[in-house]
Image (cartoon, rainbow, N blue to C red; front, side):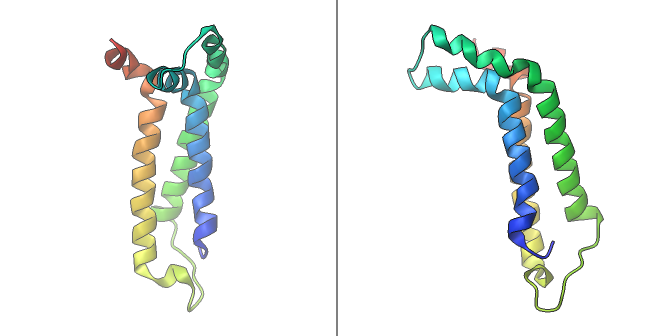
Length: 117
């Protein structure tokens, strides 16, 4: 991971997959909380059949990012930004913050009934 912009791509992919996996549940709830409603909102459940695949993709991408941050030794050239230990620490902090948010989004259908009632 010699470049921070390339290390953010897997996390961005995981975020997009988690948004897709939870779009059938979080989308209508978010719109209703904003006061937007109507019969057309039933069309937002069209993503529900793809939710398991997107959830799996999210888990796989998070596992790859975890592996690259913790298990694989980094190969850096002298003077590269990845030689700074603060960069690795910041990447790990960002990884865990994003992971917690994505896990909350992916598991939303399981605890949504307790929030809505």
